[in-house]
Every structure is written in structure tokens, then in C-alpha cells.
Length: 270
Image 1: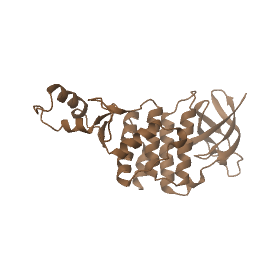
Image 2 (image 1 turned 90 degrees about the horizontal axis):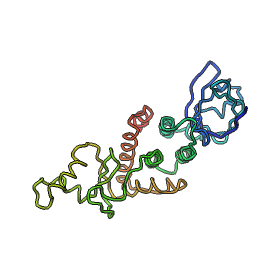
Image 3 (image 1 turned 30 degrees about the vertical axis):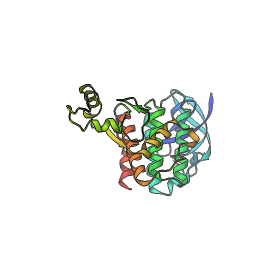
Image 4 (image 1 turned 180 degrees about the vertical axis):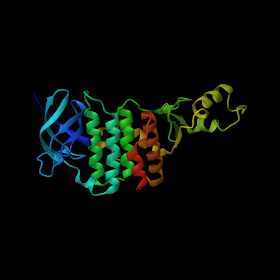
């Protein structure tokens, strides 16, 4: 039985001297491993569609418990990713995170769309890489079910917040007014014992705190709620962008509870 689908190559591995194992991200079946006979050969008809970052149409057949590639047609190879080391490094990080986060035999249409859009904007070169990376990380976290509560203060409930701190572990914000209280003495007349204990529970018992400037907070809110097509349609000043990018990275890595070698490499070449 033949299966025809579109997918993105997010990982490749050598199988034999001439064969590859591809990891495809597909909308219908999520992440699937596919054997590609002869794909490492220069003369192979499937070579172009079996390279890392290639998006194509694939005809597969199943033999035993494994899928094998019968035919392929390249749709997009994101060539610009291969001509710039920083772009290639960021793309590698994106694909490694997606590989770690995606499921087998489960629909992953939203994740595929996010990954394709991210690779496209990286290759296009019209946005700072740190902005792309941060937007991808925040949107991915939200899609995986780790959407932070950025609408109101976790202590006082105020929804009129422009400057705040984000408690990374639980994905909640505390407004600037309540953050200031935590620096006061417990017996300060303006702070009741109950208020102080509540703040201490949120802020003092964890080192996972990120202070958000107005622009960074606005960007985080935007990236978790905007339409997929508009994910990268915003700008930030350099100092605001650094806060946003650093916070997005910390938030996603904390939720996934791991680090990535490709991220270390990306940082090493900046």
C-alpha cells in the first residue's frame, strides 16, 4: 500500500554507505522515520528531496514496521540556509527542538506550519535572527500547552500591566508594583504579612525570574496569540529585543526540561 504525503526533513542519519534514514515532519502522521535507499548517491533521483530542511512530496510504502521512500518531489529546499552559517545554525536548532517536541502517529499540522514559516523567514533574512528565534520559542511553548498567563498579575490580579516580572517555572507574571513590595521589609506598614507571604512564595523561592520591559512583555503577548501568518510581523528596539529573546529561550527550555547542542553551537558563532 502506497502513502503519499508532504513533509519536512528535520533530521537525517546515515544508514548504509548509500542509504539514509529521514525523519519527516508531516501534518497527517506527525513525525515518521523513513528509509531512503540510495539517497546518499550523487546520481540518486531522490537526493534533493532528502536533504536536511527539504520540504517535499513523498510516496512511501510500508515494509514490516518501517516506511520506505519510493518517490519524492522537492517543493522547497530553503537554499539560503546553507549559505550562511548563523542561519544554518539557527535552522538546526529549530529542527532539533521540533524533533524533540513532535509526536509520532499524531497530527502535527500546526507544528509543521510553524516550522516551515520559521525556516522561511530565517532564509529570507528580513528579520533579526534573535527576534525569529524568540517568536518561534514562545509560539512553540504555547502550542505544546505551556502558554504562560500574561494577562494579569498573579498576586493582585491587575490586568493593567506594562512592566512586570515573569515567573518561569509556572508561567505567570507579577506586576511592577507587587515586585517592588518584595524588596520591602516584611514589617513594612504598606505590606501586610499575608501579602508578603504571597509574594515570597512566588518570587523568593525560585531563581527563575525574568524582568520584562514593556516592549518585551508586549512581544510575548503578541507571539502567543497572533495569527500564524503574522507571527514575525513585529519589531523591537535592540535592548527590548534582548530581553524578549533571553526570556523566550529560558521559558521554552525550562518547560522542555533540557538543553540542545545545536543551541550551544548557535550561540558559539554569534
